Amino acid sequence: MEARTARLEDIISPFDSKIVRKLRDMREIFYFKDELNNLDQNKIVYEVYEFKNNDLNLSLTLLYPGKVGNEYFMTKGHYHEKEVGEIYYCIKGRGLLVMQSRKGEVNYLELEKGTIAYVPPNYAHRVVNISDEVLSFLAFYTSDAGHDYKSIEKEGFKVIVIEVDGKPEVKFI
Ligand code: PAN
Ligand code: ZN
Image 1 (cartoon, protein in one colour):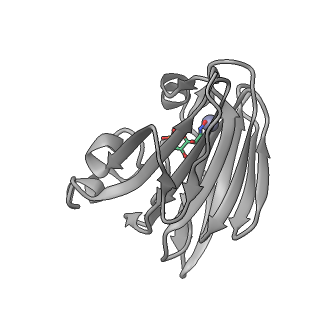
Image 2 (cartoon, helix red, strand yellow):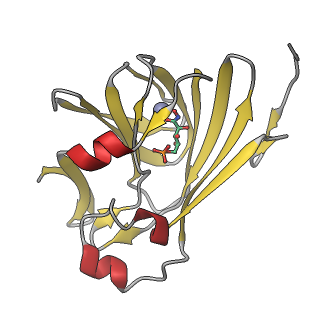
């Protein structure tokens, strides 16, 4: 087993994998489809850098500011395949961490610089950027957690986070 370090400056260095999600990758995710079609599909919504180790992974997400219609940019959201939770740590920006249990219970927490948040097992989780700067956060999770995007895509999150009169609102749909 290898013991090693990485540093967090603008991004994790070194990182083992990088994911870039553009608007074109999130067509099923955003609520306002017509508005989505009118935007540049190559616009980057977020980037994820992972530092992967034997049993524990760390990721850095840079979630850019933006909106589709009046819905804020957000991550896709997923359940873990295994019954494991996760810790989030917000480095900068302002966001909402939206969680939804398999029974459909919705919960959300505010993220700002320094917030540490726990995501329990069996809760789908997604982060929404409610500011006009980059929201960056770390996630700590077991390497075998697995990401199940399909289930929550099928069920759908019961809420959207939209801007109303310049302020974020969580609306049941
Ligand atoms: C995070 C997320 C990351 C991107 O590392 O994977 O913020 O969000 P999506 O995976 O929903 O696209 C995490 O929760 N890992 O388990
Ligand atoms: Zn996760």
